[in-house]
Image 1 (cartoon, helix red, strand yellow):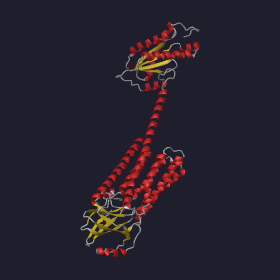
Image 2: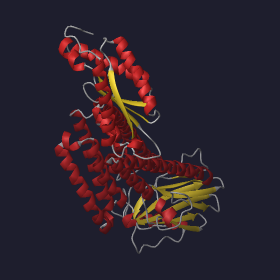
Image 3: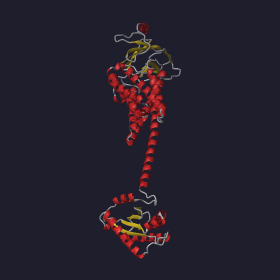
Image 4: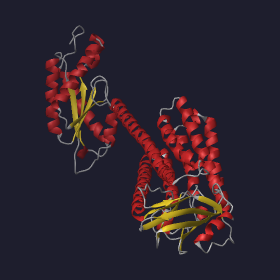
Length: 532
């Protein structure tokens, strides 16, 4: 709850803060003049204990101009605050504030207070709490200036909490879409940070009136749990640093065990939680450094992110050190800003990983598609092969609403050419036939090479007579560009006259061999010495 007004030449002066131990039966002085003697009877304290207790915070004021004022106890979580303002005229003003009371200002224990006369005042404040998260600082200043700064501080805190919540939702959505636990763990890590800071800055009290000091700091213990789950997978810690991976698992266990302990022994909650947090950040940094040394490319950004978390960690370890109002403001805002920057860096690292994984996935998909297409292509002709032909046949629908025409093509005398002139000449003839078929059959026709000298064509746009006409043209092209005996035999069948793929293939095959037999009767046998 830190806040530090930066006041310019205020029309008042104030002594430094004095801290005294407060006891239950102590009676406040009745008059302004009795206060010095009353203070001499109190036991002075150098600082408040993090394990809680009751204390007096005392300042002497001198008001030189009439104005409106604000007083506040900045720094820790405090259950009860009682402000007593004594004037030289023995007028006493009493105001109450604290964690268990209502709030005049967002995220602050500040109270508006009037000074009826000019001159000297004693500001005596009694604080009591089951624990303190920091050293308290009693402040007093002009209402106009301090109100402006309170609103500015509340705006910064609200924006930071909103940014953390947006990052948590975004990474959670990415994790859900990608089915990636790294993003899911990072999202829960961000949610735990947001929830913890929300409790620290009393959002739960403001919005939901949750006033249970025993659970106020417990969400902090969820941060190490989800952080370890996240960075163990993100850094591949089990591979690069197995010992640190096991140590990180102990941190998870320690955090879980600390929850009921902190809830039961509330006075020691701050000491226990701060110790767990410091151990967690130290171990996270050591893990990142070790993974970086072992060659993990993702460790660099995590190191930077963890170094930013060292700022609030160092401030936690300095909780026993008294601070002035300016230091408290810096500590207060640096905690939340450091958390935002740290998580932002990690979000950028995960975004880079997300883009890299997406690119790798696209490349793998592209490679698989290329391999799949290559597995369905004939290497010699670049036409679809028998495997692709079988896939296509399995998807044909034998219905009356749409007819598909199948044409089977066979190269005449290919075996004789291979035997007499060699396979190189045979391959040339195969390529010639493929080019001729591709030329006369448009892209509306699915063309396949299904065997050494066999081709097949499917079309839903050409009927049987159209297909015969185009294949006859292809036959002429082959004859003109090949030898005198080069040519193709072909046969067609349609699905509307067949019931299944086997019958379709059989009808086309029989028609093709009938044509081949007729051609053989008209053509003389190929001479042994003739070449293409």
